[in-house]
Image 1 (cartoon, helix red, strand yellow):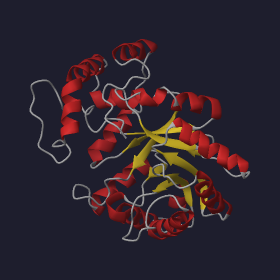
Image 2 (cartoon, helix red, strand yellow):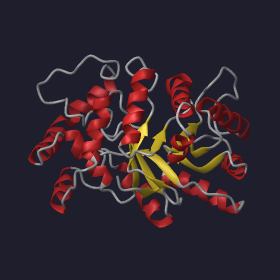
Image 3 (cartoon, helix red, strand yellow):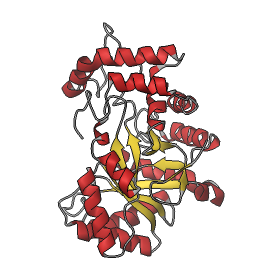
Image 4 (spheres, helix red, strand yellow):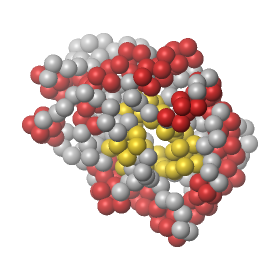
Length: 322
């Protein structure tokens, strides 16, 4: 698997990133999570992404045990990302991007992950804490060797620029990467964030490449929708109903290529120049295997043009907020 740079950093990462959000859930217990991580490692995925709030800390703990039971080479071969912001306790300081919370949250993640450093520590969401306080805390963690690089998640272009300027003022390490929702039918990041990345060298980790499953190939006109907790959400169903014709047309392009729709969705993102890695959040071995096959798919300029005609750059017909 051909490597890419981690945004404006010098570290090399795989174009597919293993998202651990489901690890420890009822659908993906520890045994299954370990099988998925083993498969990812065997197939050249060296970039793993988790967060301190995923599955109430169980995601980090499962990854930590798997790392600890391997050789030093297992840990050293990986670029490991986790996040800070979400509520992890009952206290009023057990969330957010204050220095008070960031420093303690980092120590807690290091303990759960059973490692001495976090390779990419991401601010999970923007906060109303002064950016100078947040940036100083992140830079101090870098200088202490507990964090190698840091970045953001769910930030708009102006917020990422603000964080970059604040870092430069203290001669600190700037954010190197932004993790954003991005898919064939949710291209809103192309309006401001992509131009920012082009100018300042940051890159995008794309999450929700199948747009909450709506590009999974499962949903078709006239076909009933499975009654799952996610599918019961009114906003999810409205987005599906609104865009079912578009999804069918994209599925037609995939069919012409002899591939299922998810292959086209993953491959399209991998062809976007500002994307450094696409996050796959599997619950099964089959989900990860599908993404690995998609990574081999090369799209011609003609195919990319067809997709642009259906979903023009910068538009987001399936945008439901983030």
